[in-house]
Length: 236
Image (cartoon, rainbow, N blue to C red; front, side, top):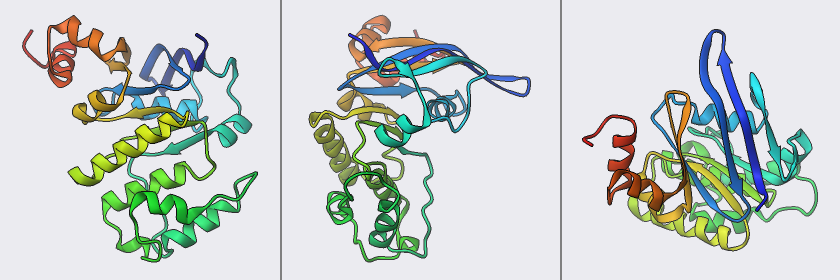
């Protein structure tokens, strides 16, 4: 099977500080893929290299068999950054309509997207909670109806009920054919929704494959426990 996203030997150094070292992984069309690692391990840096917000020091990122370029990113990939901060002076309806003018092709339906989030479209964004802003960010990532979603901590700040609804929405989107790459510190969430995972630690890839294989590797029934054993933070 050909990967949809193919990250090949990617390294990234800031000055003299290495953040990623010869990282290779592939995300296949139609899967939900989880990227796991401690804070500062390079997950967000990797996402930014994929999106060409940063450029790798070495290595290559390919999409659907071709070198990744800006037109592909804008047309096919939606992105939710961690700690997303939209302008507070607008309502969600105003903000999505404004962004919609920049989307090529058919105009998106902002109210349809907002209905999925459960947000009040006419409430100023400044009055939104952190969790409400995260839900708005997912709607914005979907604005151009991308085939590939990159979500950096999508359930950050969400209460259990809203988190459950968001995961159901991601499963629904995946069932519609969207490929999803996400990072999360919520291991229960990852176990529920992801088919495969990659574990990053000390700038390198420590595991790549199905969750079941990772659990078997460490003889554990818990993804969190297996992760701690992998990075040396738990009992073997």
